[in-house]
Length: 173
Image 1 (cartoon, rainbow, N blue to C red):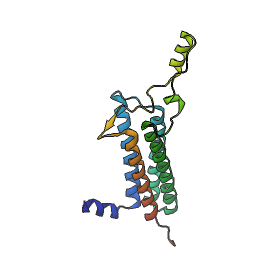
Image 2 (tube, rainbow, N blue to C red):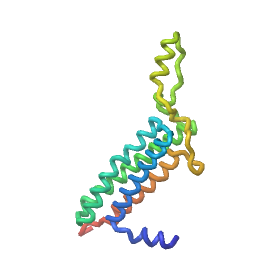
Image 3 (cartoon, rainbow, N blue to C red):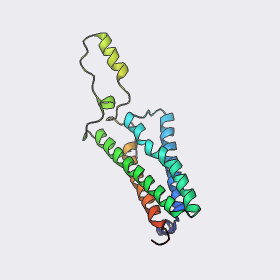
Image 4 (spheres, helix red, strand yellow):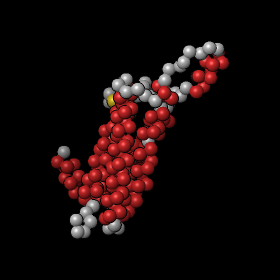
């Protein structure tokens, strides 16, 4: 454990940006693997991927800026990545609450069918209903849903981005 702590303390801004890039890419890759294995994502799951899609190229640019000594640009990149993952953690927290029935979810993925007056009305409602439901998780990994894991991963990546920002000192600071 102390070796991991020492490695973390010695991580350079470039190293932290590359860690953010690798972790974001691995997380999206994992989501795609689960999807390929037949676990279709709900609407909120798909929205939770957006911060990762944005953070991957941004972390690469931040690593490039840090490597080139462009500390102001690197710091700006780290702040943007941190904000992305803070928003991602908040969305994942909301989704976790929807799964636990603490929060009401969006109607497009948690709404019940309305009373149909005819078979055609019923069929129309079924065609508009999006599956799978946001409030009914189908996959648990080590006792947590993927949205639960995303709260933890996004918060950790936001913390790593803040650490990168703090270590990217501009001369004169």
